[in-house]
Structure formats: structure tokens, C-alpha cells
Length: 330
Image 1 (cartoon, rainbow, N blue to C red):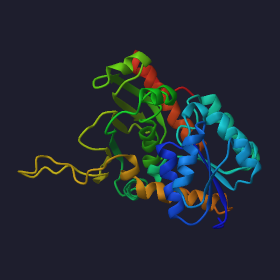
Image 2: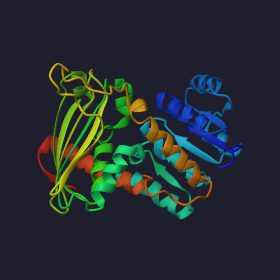
Image 3: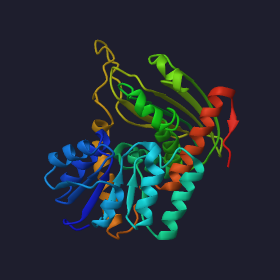
Image 4: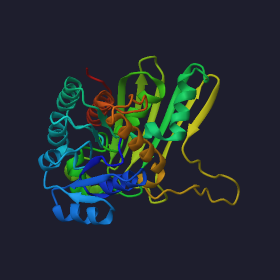
């Protein structure tokens, strides 16, 4: 994509600011910010070297836009992404594309019909450690896979107001893990058994959500996966994956030191997703801009079908947390 291209950033909260930083680091482009809170958009535009503000997605499109990143509230994704795709603007949307399967498919089919690139922000696909783990898993190096273990723990929970708009912990935080199980193995998920509790944030019960959850998964070839996720992990931001096969065991993510006198300290310690996955976000943006400029698709890209399949599993986990084991419905 030309250094003079116009890239829209729709949603100017923490994630939007992070993407703006990566966009600037990748080269001089004109950034146009859109947010329901115009003051927030203007503040972010002021912090960049080439930023300006548009009052709406319509104004962004009419002014000329070569690509857009949608980082606004999840509940607004269908409307915002739909408008951008209708206008022919290549779009990278933070996950999930929607919290409803029908809306997810509608947006995906629309992008396919228009021939417009539509990416979903599964940045872990671009993390060097996870990418290496996938290569070793899918190459057959480990032989027949037996089990996977994935961990995702935030340092602290987002504000309740944000959680009201992002769906449950299953469709928000743990959506990455459901996606990673499929991506790491190349297999489909056929059954989910899940449970959850509100241990550190009891106020989450008021919105029917949890801060601590686990899920046990069966893949279509019988392989087992165990997932654990939490909103509150004051020690560090912790995201890891392990795969056990008949020929070996490999892992991605930081390990916990266990030597005598170490105190079990975690090294390195990450402050949050923006820190742990800085390289992954940067590479995802680089690949997306290349695709938006007409380049070949990237095999690591997360598309609407990935979001759809991960959401199917997340919704099944929600049902299971309340009623026991259930199949993932088609």
C-alpha cells in the first residue's frame, strides 16, 4: 500500500490507539479517526503525525479511504463493518465480527460477494511462537496429537460497561482460544463442556457473566483440549499453549521459573495484550495492508469463517456452563 494511502481507524479507545501506533511505525500514512466520542478521536489524531478526524464512517468513506480498522464496541461491529464493505473498503475488524452467528455469516457473505478483503483480528496467528507451534503440529512432527492445553488470563478485567457490550467471557476473551485450537490442529471442534464462576468480580453475576472459566473440548478426530481463562491475574498477563503428541511435547508462551529460590516467578512479565503480542499485532497490520493494496492473501489471516467457527464453540460453551455438555450446533 502506498505511503500516501488513507487508513481509517474506527474506534479510538486503547485498542484503536495501539493500532494507530503500529500503523505509524509501518510507514507514513494518513490516518483518519472515527469515534462516537469525537473528543477521543481528536485526542488520538493530535497524538499522531498525520491524523485527522471524520464525524462518521460515511464521512470517512466519502473523503476517500483505502483501508479501515474497526476497533469500536462489539455491538457496533455489524453496522460499521457492513457500511465499509458496502463501500468497497478492505476492513480488519477486531474479534468477534459479531456475537451472533447469522450476523457473522451475513457480513462474511457480503464481503465475498463484493470481493472486499475482510479480516478478523485473531492476532495470535501472527505470533512467532504460536506460528512455530502450528507448523510443528500440522507437519506431523509430533505424530498423532493427544491433547492440548491453552491458558489465557488478563491482568485485570475491563470496565463493566465494556463487558456489557462485548458478550460473555466465552465470546470475548476465550474466543481466541477456541480459534487457536482449530488453527493449531487443523481440526474441527465437535463437543464442548464448560463451567464458570465469578470469583474475583462478583458483580459480573449481574450481567450473567463469569471471571473464571474452563472448557474441555473434543476434536473431530478424538483429540482432547483443555482451556482455562480468567479476567483477573494480578501476577501477569498470561497466554500459553501446549501440545502433546505421541512423539513429543511443544509449547508457546512464557514459562514459569521453578528452580529453588526462584519463587516461581514468571519471566518475562507482560503488562497486557498490547505488550505480549506487540510483534503479532504489527505483523498482522503489515499483512492486512498488503492484502488491502491488492496483494495475495496471507495464510495466517483470520477471516469471517474463523470468527464464525470460534463463535459457534463459544456459544456452545455458554450453554454448557449452564446446562452441561452439549454438541456444537451447525
